[in-house]
Length: 259
Image (cartoon, rainbow, N blue to C red):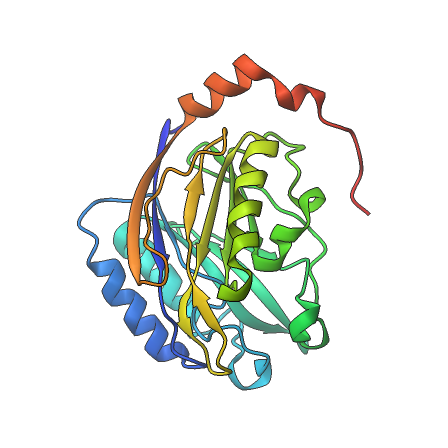
């Protein structure tokens, strides 16, 4: 088990519906990191932006982006994650992929599709929450709109890190800030949110506000809003253990079942 986990947050602009160019851009950004990291985190739909034109840009699990993620993970001996538009059995998914250096791929399909943008009419909703055990850290990966639904994120399994990748618009960024902090506090876990910046192909503006919060809800990153930026942050198991043992709030959580 690894006591510390170094993560790299990529708050980036995205080229609209251009997977090849986005892969090239991220490859250059990743190459600029001079330190060894354990986990590279990219935004939601990092190859396309948040598009409803799934048919024109969707890939398979054997497609170029999955191959690229495996190559990046192997080259840098690091896991890499972000969500991609995947087509499978004639259905489209907003799928988070967690790719390890070994080539192992774990997938999470977005549970809460964003009805305001008609995502629910294009993409099939996922039904399973997953926990990834990586280097002794239990990570719960979720996607953007999932952030508004605390029951889906509730820490019933003692995960260490709650991770959101997003295309969360500037118009509602106050909710993003507040909910990331709340998820960290109520679940006594690190909470990571990686959001894009820039303006997409349908003129929606994104202001980033990517951040990491500790188990007490303290923001421990300093990423500038609205700017492309990479920030490295080290998560510490002793921080989680110290406050969970001292405060024991999770011992009083409610019992329930997902349906």
